[in-house]
Each structure stands twice: as structure tokens, then as C-alpha cells.
Length: 143
Image 1 (spheres, rainbow, N blue to C red):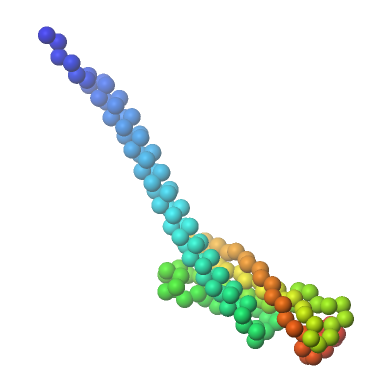
Image 2 (image 1 turned 180 degrees about the vertical axis):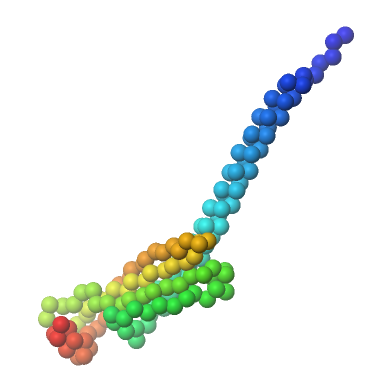
């Protein structure tokens, strides 16, 4: 009676194929983990930038044509080194401005964070209306 089973050559081939499959699977898992960490950092920075932009939009005392900057709290950023830079500027003024008319301001917010040794950035823009005051009209006419 003849015994059935695998030959040594079949076992070596099967083990080699299994080894290649396992290595490919481990590389895929490693890449997925790296991407998840990168996206987690990006998502944190996006949330922080939304909060910062909301604060800037609501701050009516924000000086025009002045660059403001600062770091994000590492506790809020999940230990990530990140910061911001913002600038408020007049975007659209009436042709003949008078007090009480509306004007449009632009807030530009640049956000940065460190991803390893690489600095990454993105920029957000927002617009808000304001009512012109007499000193705004004098400044606009002087320009």
C-alpha cells in the first residue's frame, strides 16, 4: 500500500509562497499604519485651524495688515509641534466709501505642523463684512 503525503520539494515551494505572502501582508499593514498616523496628524491640525479661524473671524479688534502668529497648544495638538500665522486685510471697499457702508475683509490663515523632520503647511481663507467707521473712510481716502 502506498502512503500519500507531500514531498520535501512541495513543502519548500509552499513555505516559500507563504513567506512571500506574509511579507507582502506585513508591508501593507506597515504602510496603512503610517498613513493612518499621517492622516491623524492632518485631521488634528484641520480641527485646530478651524477653531483658530473661528476665533479670528469673531475678533473685531484684530488689527488690519498686521501678521499675527503663534503656536498651537501641544496638549490640544496631541503632542504635535504646530503653529499658525494670520493676516487680516481689506478685500473689497465701496468706490466712494462713507461711514455706515459695508466693506469686505479677508482673513488668511496659514497653518504649519511638523511631520517627522518635514514641515507641512496649508492655507485657509475666510471673509467677513464690517461696517465702515469714519476713521476707516479717512484711511481709505488717504491710500
